[in-house]
Structure formats: C-alpha cells, structure tokens
Length: 305
Image 1 (tube, one colour):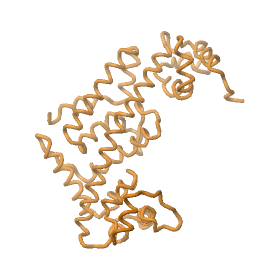
Image 2 (image 1 turned 60 degrees about the vertical axis):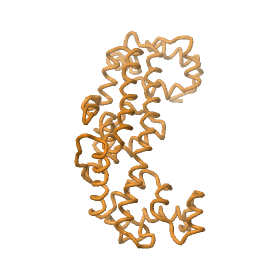
Image 3 (image 1 turned 45 degrees about the horizontal axis):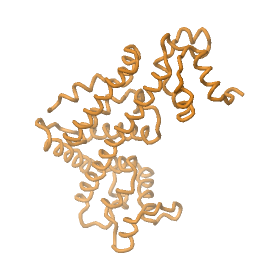
Image 4 (image 1 turned 180 degrees about the vertical axis):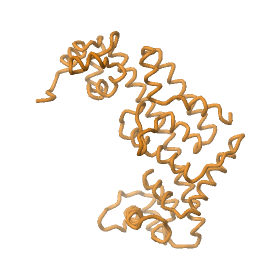
C-alpha cells in the first residue's frame, strides 16, 4: 500500500526520523486530532526544502518541534472560529438588506422572487435559484425540503411567504446569487444601503459600489465555506485568480460589519498574532504572516477610528 496504516507510536517515530522533535504529549495529540490534520495540514513552514528534495520525502528544519506545528494548528482553528462568527453576521446583513431592497422594488406583488422577470441573469441561473425557493416552500416535487417550523407556519397560515422569511432558509451562496441576479437598479439600492449603514457608524463615509460589495461577499462566501468545512484557513487563497487571502477579507468585513463589531473582531484578531509568535520561531512566524497577507491589517484598523 502507498499509504499503509501506522500506529501512533510509528507516527511519532516517523516524525523523529525526519528531524522533528516530539514530546510526551505528541501521542495523545495525534490520537485525538490525527496525523493528517495536524502534520500534513501545517508542516509547510517547517519543511527543509533542500533536504526534502535530496531525501525525496519530508525533512524538517533544524529545531523543528511537533508542539510548534500543533500551535499553528490550534491558531488556525481559533482563527476559523473567530472569522466564522463574523461571516455569519455579514451573511445575515446581506440577506436582510437584499430582501428589503427587493421587496421595496416589488411592493404589492405576490411572491415576486418566484417570477423570472424579477431577475437579470441567465435563464438557467434564474431557474435554479427559483427552484431553490420552491424547494424551501415545499413546492418542488423533485427536491423535498428540509422542514422549518417558521416556513411551515407561513405556508399554513398565510397566502404567501415573504422574501425576508424565506431568506432565512437560504445559504449564503444562495443569498449571494439572489443579490447578483437582481437588476442593476436593485443592486445599486443594496449597495447604497450598505453605504448608508457604513456612514451611520463611521466618521468618514465611503461609497460602496455594487461591484465592491459583490467582491466582498464573494470572498466572504468562499472563506466562510473553508471555515464551515474545517479546512486550513491561514494560508488559504480564494477567488478565480487565487490571490485573495485572510488579510484581504479582513478589509472586506469592515464594509459590512458595524464599526463596533468590526473593532471588536479586529482587536481579537490582532491579539492572536503575538500569542502565536510566543510559540514558534520568528522565521516561521514571518512566513505565516506573509501567507495571511497581513499588510492590509494595520491600514484597515486605522481607517475611521
């Protein structure tokens, strides 16, 4: 077998044979967290590339310790938890504002979100979105819904389900499509509303264009999925060009969170860095910060404070 089963003791021996120091806690950590998740996920900054190329397998830099790899693993877990909470707030705001602006544009219409004429996108894209709405309502014979009490209440007791109710059922990805598929006038109204919300809690107002808002939520959506699936986050790259990093989405969040929420988030975020720096070498820490594209953070923290 290319990847045969190894006992925890054999995993520890493998790490030591490759130049990584272990300690008495290593076996329990490997048993609880998994070799693949900890080592394979977070070994990159500790790899000696020249020695690895010569040996044709992993070799670690002198002084590498398993506890340092585990520190980076735990840092990344805490980072996911911190960001996921803020992504959830950003998601709720997009759903609320998009539903509000859509309802304003279609006042008096019966369930306009089920009408293809309400959208400005490719027919197949609109059809899929409407199918998602129909599934939520229990009107799609091909896709049974996941029952939700609040939707059941509206379906049973009212002659329609408002978009702001059904939006609670939608994923962030579906809500993002709902925003992107709107006519330009509605998208502009959504962006204008975000600009107003920003101005109401910052000293210096800014113009948030529909394009900038779309890019921000495109990043938030992708990074939220990474957090939700418990994948490695600190060095992740998203967007079609794969050049958007954590440092970039931190700036995106400033556009969509309240100032108080953003400052609280950023304070927690920045406090994590010196805590990690105490556990790993300066060289590894520098690489981690570069992977995160930390350069925009200082600028984002000072804007409108």
